[in-house]
Length: 435
Image (cartoon, rainbow, N blue to C red; front, side, top):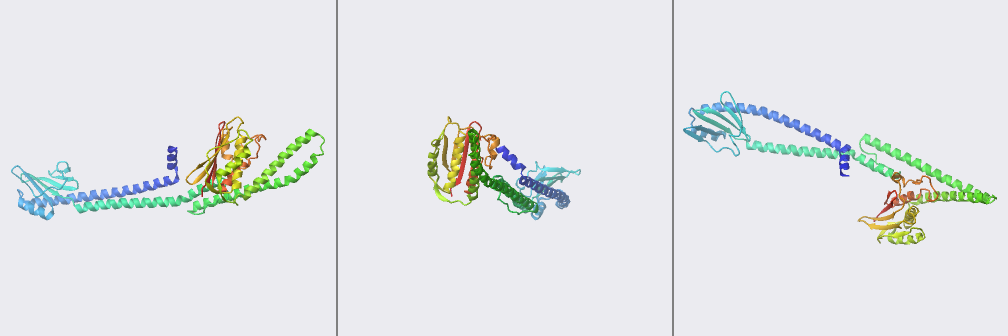
């Protein structure tokens, strides 16, 4: 699961835009740093040339052999450290800078015998003079080093600020995509009246408008379909009544009984369609009360006492929730009825139980019946859908029960989930908010 989430993260538009922006920022930073390095190398070479000219002037000023007293006076004025190493005379005008190691410094030797070196930001020149070796050490400018550190810190802070601003800008720009995704999920769950705000950049705003137009057309299409079914159901009532009257004049008893059974089936279907439509239109008008769901479940169990393999009560929680008791009774009755229909009589009893969560209440209906094919699971809450493609009368129903249950639970602000394995059983979880 985790590798899949990581793979999905790196494939997202947001991550790609962020990576592109970060790469561009790093490229700009490296370009600026490279420019500074080039400028510094150029200025350093100029500094070294000037230092060499200054060293020539100091050598002439010190005399041959170099005068230690004169050297100390020069060192006090310019801050340099002058060293003279001679077999008979060794002196030094002051302590060397901290961390300076003349033996491990980076050096460059010239044909004249002069050596130019650099160590920890300190420059020095070493040359042969007065029968010995004369060294001039130019200490590093501490203030300049501090300014460089502050400059680098300011660059890092500026880069973090810029990247943070880019992150927030990209996130805000792509926020309509998250809204669109939630809208797709809502419509996919059957809430076709859901609309998303038409905001953001022009392309995303056009996409939101197209989505809302699509949802509106789907809503009208399904409403027209439902209205057609209702109209047909209403119109069928009169012919069915007339057929039932004419049926009594048929002399053949077997034919009369067969036709009566078919008419009864048609009448039951019409009544189910009309009742489902009536309940759907009144779902939004919930009669909310403080309901003890544990007591409500206990009151339903006697209705199924003669149904095999029976209903078994699991742990129940006596916590009141705001719900419409009559509509919740319809939901639980349909779930138990479905479970019993698809569970063999010799199988273990259907179980109904409850679980308390911090912000919600869960009702579980489980059976160990025939189960449902995996291909049918995504369509179970669609009206008129039945996994039994033969639509056998043995299992009864018209594919309206689960669709109606979902509509009622959605109106309560909850959700209904179904997990099933073919040949092992089914578990339905109804989740209701506690407030």
